[in-house]
Picture 1 (cartoon, helix red, strand yellow):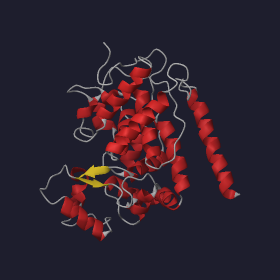
Picture 2 (cartoon, helix red, strand yellow):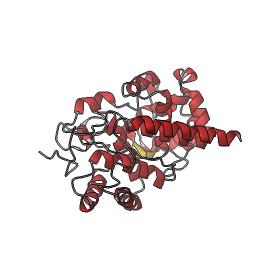
Picture 3 (spheres, rainbow, N blue to C red):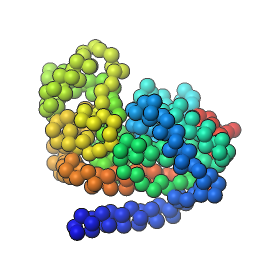
Picture 4 (spheres, rainbow, N blue to C red):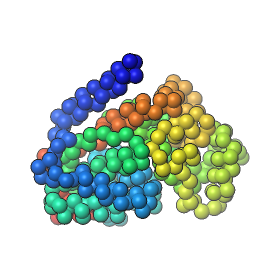
Length: 328
């Protein structure tokens, strides 16, 4: 009975959030008349992309995240150009999946031309990437329009880095209306995907000038594996799975890893092992590591919130014909 009440309450919160966010002109049925097959078109294209490369699920999810934290969820990350967000430090040679978004856009345009924004495509693709990786879905609010400009400096300053502490990361989340629960639940997206040696190599040999590995990397087998993958002066572009338990499965093993000292990124492991975590994030990591349903519920709620960061609606922005360039 207690479990049933918890689930009912969680759904009440989700529905209440949907009603609240709908006031911003985003609705679940925005394209019900203008593009009724939209969701099935996107799902089919994402499915095809994941059959080719399962890692693409994490890449599409990350594109949505990195888009919404800069200028709001306006597809500005997709814009080409030397001054674009694509070439900001957190995205350059790292963010990927643009060609999949192009394929989705082409398929959508063939069915309903000039109707669906690239920002909404990113949002649906992110949800589908989670579902097709075994995670829990959520009702996607739609009606965003596309922005006219990219913001490279904003991408450099607004996106959390893998070397930052909990305080700095939390401030960046709060700046876009997200809270500490969102920090931890959205970090759980690292249950899929990979990271390059450049993002965690500093932990492996001489962490913070100690001439030793990061002491929070407790799993010696994983440490040895990462050291072999990323030797000193080695290829910094080589990648490691973020979740050594279930690389392509969207589950709560990421949090179980953190409890065991198996977090690949410093910014992940500090959610459990740092002094700051004792009074902020550790309790949530422990909750999610033991309760996959609690993680699933909080993650979907956080994704809904994140998708509502400063969307362009109504007559603002435009519906791009090509996600890489503005219409004019």
